[in-house]
Amino acid sequence: MAVRHVVLRGSQYEIGRALARQAPPVRPVPIDPAVGAARRTWFERNWPQHLARTAGIAEQAGFDPSRDDLALDGLGTLPSWSGCSAVFDGKSTLGRNYDFFTLAEDQMEQVIQGEAPRPSEQPPWASRPYVITTVPEDGLASTVLTMANLDGATEGINESGLAVALLIGDIENARPAPGGGPKAGLSLIQLVRFLLDTCEDVEQAKRALLGAKQYDDGLRCHYLVADASGAAFVWERGAHDSEHVVEVADGPLCVTNHPLHQHPDVSALPADTPESFLTYQRLRTLTEHLGDPVRESLDLVAVPSTPDSPWCTLWRTVFDLPARTMSVRFWLGADRHSEEIVFGAGR
Image 1 (cartoon, helix red, strand yellow):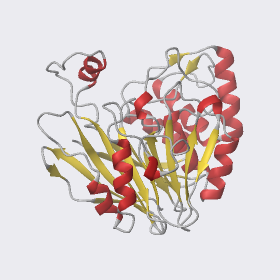
Image 2: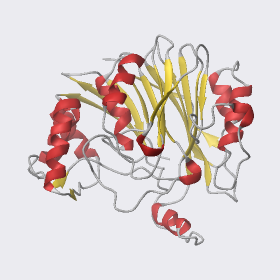
Image 3: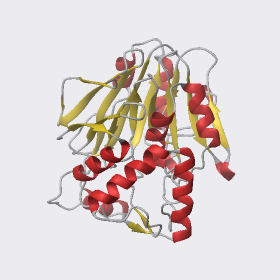
Image 4: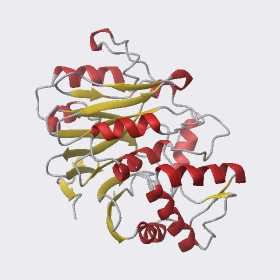
């Protein structure tokens, strides 16, 4: 695994240009100009930071940022089969495991089609993550971790001590719907950075999410959100566009890869299936060890690397919210891990 840490300073526009230089060649997605205009309007009203960065991405890639027939954001994709566990200790620490395949992208396509993976010349899909620290002149500084999407994130923390972690929300039914694509509002992978750009605490994050337009193209995710005061919640969207803020009155909050609003009682969780990736067992284990330090709890539910399985915990992230830090231990292959690396989110 080769982890790259980039620190970007300047205006949001300049940060966008720098992101485009880090990414593979930008390939805009053709879209209905009416949708493009609606996206631009939504970002202007709700997330101008992203709109400014997108203009920088477009200029760097040689495209006119005012074109409404092209989607110029989305520097990467979110794989549909990533299993994760996350826990907030109810005080000051949020942690998560990121579990994913150790296969290359073409091998992943073969597995999805029911074939055995063939040898590949490509590197494993998740072997080149980025840690991106942005320090804008006109907004909140933040540090995020991303597997594949340079203008989105899977987790991160901002200088106010707000942290967000994305997890697949219904892994048993994680099948993206055909015909998806950019729409007005927030995609799954954009939501983490949206909150870190626009919110300083949990209450602001709730209001932002309840007022935001979101789309998932059939792939449900949920998000653990916590701040330096000790407040936290899980944000979920369910059937028929229902929205759920899942909280506990006082104490730790755990989440894996099934909808909490459908299974509020841990003692009544169903049995796992081959498609559930032990989501119910992992939540039971985390709940049984709520008093343990976050790192120890996460290690109990980590997926070990074995020769007969192309799936393991690729990194463990721990956020110290009062300190505004993100500490990450990366998997290096076989049973080897890096030392924990600490990244700050301040100026």
